[in-house]
Amino acid sequence: MRLHREGTTIMLGTGLALLALNGLAYYFLFRENSTAMWLLALVSVLLFILVVQFFRIPARLLTLGEKQVIAPADGTVVVIEETEEGEYFKDKRRQVSIFMSPLNVHVNRNPLSGVVSYFRYYPGKYLVAWHPKSSTDNERTTVVIQQPNGVEVLMRQIAGALARRIVWYVKEGEQVKQTEEMGFIKFGSRVDLYLPLDAKINVKMGEKTKGGVTVVAELA
Figure 1 (tube, rainbow, N blue to C red):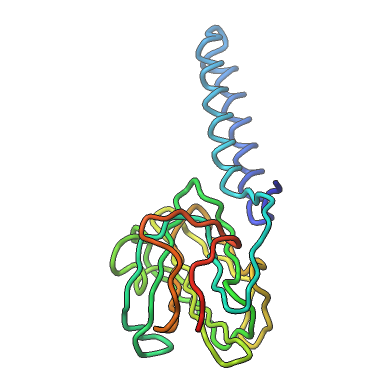
Figure 2: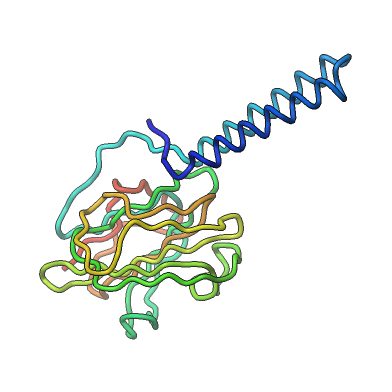
């Protein structure tokens, strides 16, 4: 396992702040109270571990397949439905949404290989990720990847109530590879996939996904 570069500043800042807090508490509050100091130290360590785990990247055997759409994120499948995609396709698509809790791995991966035919970033609100309007009102990105045969899949990163920054590493016109890192959502959120209607969905509601590993769907 390794730690993601997006967490360097946050982890360093959190560690220094907790050290300062414990130092001040020792000299001005709990110098004569060893029990209170041990409790504060324990809480501080647990809090630091919680922050660090947000940025972990576990070692995995990644899945590759030209016809397969691979899960772009760790999380739980919360939406599988036919819906109208109004930003890019402007027609009906199969939507699969994965909710990322604060305990999930937060790196996002390309669901398939191809060319980024469309990219947009939208600042916005921070509604809870399962709110019906989070897909259109929250901070988000929209990325469309086109395969050589012309098939396109849309992926949307959506910030949640805790997330305050979406990071992306792709740009329009760029060639991307399946399962490689395409971005990061800090402190949890949601990822939507919009697939062709004839795509075979391989996941079920409530199923846990692993980014870069789970096959979400198979393209015709």
